[in-house]
Structures are given as structure tokens and as C-alpha cells.
Amino acid sequence: MLKTVILSSALFVILGCTDAQQSYSSNPTRVANNENKETLPENEESPPEDQDSAVADETESVTEVVSETPKAVSVRNSAGSGGSSGLVEVPFTDSTGLASSYKINAPADVGQKIYGLHIHLHGDGGGGYVDFPNKELRNNLIGVTIKAPNQTLQWGRAAGRPHARFVNELIQNELLKKYNIDMDKIFFSTVSGGSYFFMGSFLPEFGQVYNSAAFVMCGGEAPRVAFTDPKVLGKFRVHVEVTAGERADILASIQAMTTAYKTAMDTAGIAAAEQVKIQTQNIQGAGAHCVFDGVSYTSGIQQAIDTKFKAVLPL
Image (cartoon, rainbow, N blue to C red; front, side):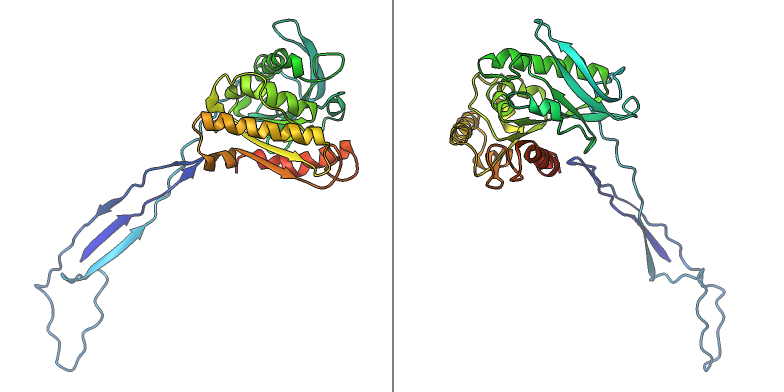
């Protein structure tokens, strides 16, 4: 009897990486020995052959499915330690003496696991810092909100560059050293003045440091500084959420931002088909400035983060 064993291919897909298919076949062959076969009377049927009997021209195929253990996914983690768990407010001063504070709501097991971050930048006046709309742990992202480093609690504008440095240093020199953070999962949400600052100053100057995305609400402006690395335009995902009843000056600023970023992406050689995936925009409801739920500024922002922030996360 001719037996054929075929090892089936196993295909695994992990974060876009595909293991090579493997196959193996073995063909052990056993030839029948017919020398001592009995001769039966004409009218008597031959009994069924025993399973151990073999017929030379008969083949039997056996298929075995062999499972493989998927390869471990490599994580770029910061290996930080010593950060507090729970909801705490912490002062921070950058390398130039610019000082403010941040709030973080870390889970109890933060010392044993790797987490990502969801960084929130409030609007003018700091309401989002008080409300902390991203404080709940979701999608394995620890919520952090940063207070603008000035008395007016206003991000950016003419102070865009020093504020951008402040935020970057707070993340790199404070959060990543105190907590074990997946450095490819540091995401941002921004509101109003925080959106102007993020799109006008932070993303052009420090976006290349972060392999991530931003959920930009009810604001935004054209870049105030040159892009440190124009390649960031091809990988940093931005989704803009705005209401149909938004102020005319803010809608005009968002339009100018969209045009300026498209020009920058064209210059960087990013195909149009990719541009529409990297930067998207949605009009939600007829509410006024940031009133996404039609009720209030505060509840509207909370609703947008609760229901729409996931749009910028990887599938």
C-alpha cells in the first residue's frame, strides 16, 4: 500500500506580517506479499481484506493539520517605572523652566503591564483640564490631560514652539520614564485652542516622534513652522470633528489648515489616494462651538471622545 502524508500549510497574520507557508510530504510505501494467498472455491466470495493487507496499485492519502505558535509581536516599550496609580495631579517643569502640571489616571496594575497613552489638550481657559474627559481607561490607553503652561491657560499661537517643546518633554522625560508605555500607542485628542496648537505647532515640529494619530475637535490652523520631517505627513493619522453650527472664523481656519496640509502632502509626494485616508473630517450635528451633542460644550466634548475617538485607532 502506498501511503502519502501531507503536512498542511499554516498561515498566520500578526499586525500585517505573514509567516511563510511551510509544507512537507513523506511517502512511506509498503508492498504486499501475495506468496501464501489461499485459493477459494468458485462460489465462495473472498472475505474483506484485513486492514494490514496491501494492494500494490492502491494508495491511501492521509492529511495532517499541524498548528504553529504565532510569533510574538515586538513592542517598543519605554520600560519606565515608579509612576503612581490612580488619579493624581503632578507638577512638571521642562528643560527651559516652563512649568505647569498634568493629570493622569493610571490603573492599579500599571506596574505590571505595558499600556498606551491618550493625551488630551484642552481648549482656551482650561475647561478640559478640569473635566478630564479622557480619564477612563479605554483600549488599553491611560488617560492624561496637560495644563497649558501660562496663566491664561491658552495653548500655542505665538508661544507655539515653546509649548510644543513642553508637551514633548513631558511625554518623553516624564511619562515614559515613570510608566512602561508602548511607544507606538501614544494618541492625542485636542479641543478648540488645543487643536489650533496641535495642528499649527506640535504636529509639524514633533509629529515624527510619534507613530500614532490625533482626534482633533472644533479647531485647527495651518502649520506655523516647517515640518521637521515631512515623512510624518504620510503616517500620522488626523481626524477632524466639527459641528455644522461652528463659528465662521473657526470653520475658515479649519479650511485653511486642510488646504495647507494638502499642499504639504503633495510636496512630500504622498499620493492623493493615501491623503484621504490619512486626514479625514466629519461634521456632527448642528450645535454651536464644540456642542457635538446639541446640549453643551462640556457634554458635547465628552460625547465626542466617548463615541468618536476610536476612529483614529488602528483596526
